[in-house]
Image (tube, rainbow, N blue to C red; front, side, top):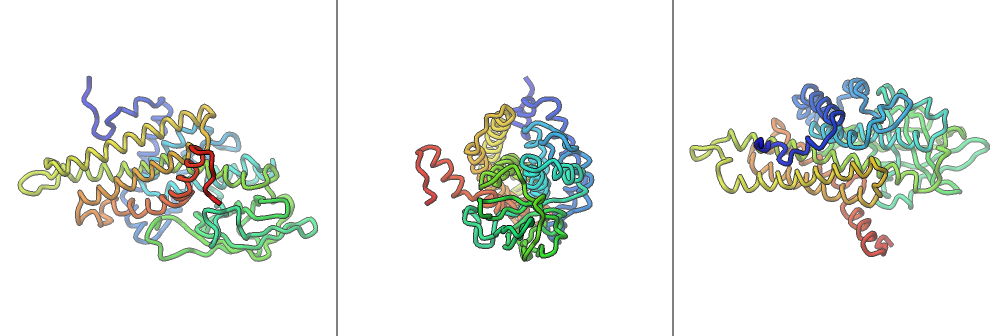
Length: 388
């Protein structure tokens, strides 16, 4: 038997197909070549690396789990692995891909008209058009059913008014999928961002996800034709199904940030000397490394299990909440522990740890807070809703 690899203790790589390994390796090589060296500076400068979008599209990562319209049509496990490798670079990079594919392309792909699909999806898959997803509002986060954005009919047109907050890709988007309350229920609209009355305002002063373009969307009498409506869905089922797609990517992606922190701590512990020897030789440091390795590998097994279930069409949204809740907790605990091993160097952007730790503070609460996912699982266990 070969000796276990400290960076893949359980040999999880061997559980993947050749195609899945190839996708993971391709994305990892891209991140190491194009992202790793620059991510700290982009984070410090609050700069999204828009010049990488074309290359990401060429690799087939945008809407990769969708079929047709120029999308790669990979399985869900491959999509998860790509999210993991992207977030090992930076959460902002994975967030861009998640929003583009799962929150902007997916609703058009699943609920859109043939015309909407043909107009937007091929260009979005290539990275020529960028999308965003407008659901969260300034005063409405965990309770989207109480949204204030309205859509009212005016002759053959629709008129939208309202605001959306914390919108990833908002300032760089060509199209926004906006959810609004209409007389018949919540409806989705495909809104070109150059439509009169549509404004995207950059959210500044962030100390997390600084490599992500985050915006407030303001809609003031935005007039749209009937053809802008997503015809395939009415009600909250539409946006919530999109969120489940994105959360699935997060339960993989967060482990990429965790793995990056674990590997940085392992490398540091074997090279940093105190008291005449590497700090990895001390019991307390070994205990930290072992705990990080245990939790990371358990999280990876969970992600792979959920990926296989999703590929089989047997992944209910409650189990996506399970994965998002526990794997983000795992990743943020690894980041914090890794920071202690690097000590003062752990707060420097010369290393990835504090950047990942800060980013994970956002990942912890977006796409559903810990509290919401806990209540989702609580309702599953007890049959009782604790929301209201």
